[in-house]
Length: 276
Image (cartoon, rainbow, N blue to C red):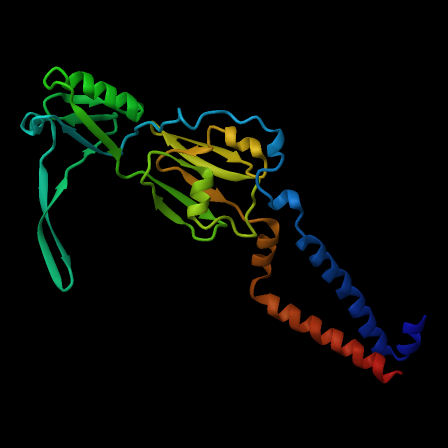
């Protein structure tokens, strides 16, 4: 009743009803801007989750287009020479200096059929095998020619891509033989406050067939998911939450809306002061 006493004329009434419409709108924005604990916290209910012991046994499988560095050595280095690709000399120019004569090992490219052309042994099927399985196969075949051969194998182009609502999206090279989803997200500086944590998309290609899976990292049982460990060339996508989508829709008009709201609040304050 007091408000209507203050707002005596028609113009005052218009201002009042305008403010009356704006205030609920602002309330709705504040309401939907609130985030609950279950939307943001990782590893919820981990105390009641039975974790599988897969860390020591997990190995990625070699796929087409992998680049393999394989080095064979023996007590007598000369004996192992035929089983290694020749090293090539490269010239590197780093201003203002030019360095020449650096040696680099050539690598094996796994073709579309999952095979490599290995010296002396010929074509070998390595696609679909783990690193341990390839080493076992090579050792058994080379042992015919060399007693107790030493073989080192590494995938040199192992990488994963992290996109969407993370601190630093990009493609990251992996120097170890495995990487977890958590480690990949950490390399990308973790999810932003706008990232949807319960619906992370992982796209994977195996033998030319693409598959995908969605992971909820707010629940601790995702650690037991087959997508907890990433494979080479996996794509991880974090989608934006509704607040980010709504903000993108408002876009450059946000500043205008804030200015109008401030003006309306100032106007009603002046009206109420003048009618006092």
